[in-house]
Length: 316
Ligand SMILES: Cc1ncc(C[n+]2csc(CCOP(=O)(O)OP(=O)(O)O)c2C)c(N)n1
Ligand SMILES: [Mg+2]
Image (cartoon, rainbow, N blue to C red; front, side):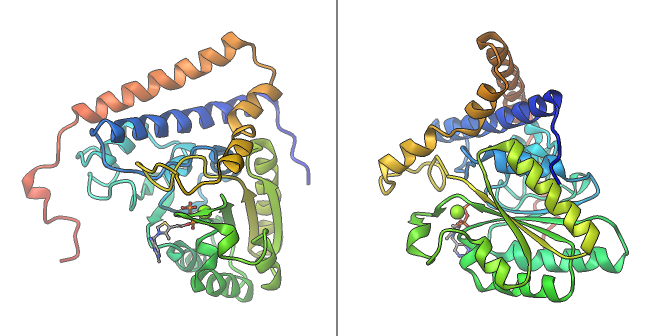
């Protein structure tokens, strides 16, 4: 299947990537200025989030990991409510109680953000099983990293999904880094999809910096899930351009490798492909900046939760 993408759809994906980039750059800048807590950005990986999320239906469910802002914004999350969550404000999606690392947004079908590396994989199997038992046609998209693929829960989840025929779109964002350790040091091969093949799961590895290629591959994977009732494994091959979290001086990073990947920036590449004029491109960037500035100001001006909220929404 080779899904055609019209110019309007490509422009929408470009705008979505720009919004994510601007949101995360602002979050990092505010951390550096001492005005926000540390955060994990997905700068350089925006095409993976936008390509996959654009291919999903709104009734499909999403589970994600600590690098989740791109997935949330691509799904339509309000950046003001995301910033409010990071700042601990009452208007945050989880009333300011989750920060960026545990956020869930029920109305957007984002079931959870897992900070336990690999936990989203085992939970995705349960979520997909629940959908199957409800005879829902929705699928479960599970985003995780190459580091999570080194956890035992990765193989447990893939095995169960294959044996129980669970409608899961596994999205492995292979960004070459696992905190401060390069992927080369933790696994013997380059393509994580090879492990999924051994579990009897159909796979594709796609250029994770090409949003149109990611979108097409995700559409094909989703069609496979719907046609066969089997899981599908999509590996988006990409690179984490900033540090593991903010702040991170990246002193451990190979400068040549980083420079080579910077030339493959997903936003620059799509902008060039669409042959936008300098003023058209600037207008898109200005629009993203204005929206993010407004979102930040809204979040800063929002009230903190009342003291009486302190013991609500907690287990003990
Ligand atoms: C079970 C567990 N072990 C270790 C950590 C610390 N930790 C947080 S993120 C991370 C790296 C995860 O790498 P990857 O899955 O590739 O995701 P990425 O950060 O590259 O997006 C580690 C080791 C954790 N949160 N949970
Ligand atoms: Mg990684």
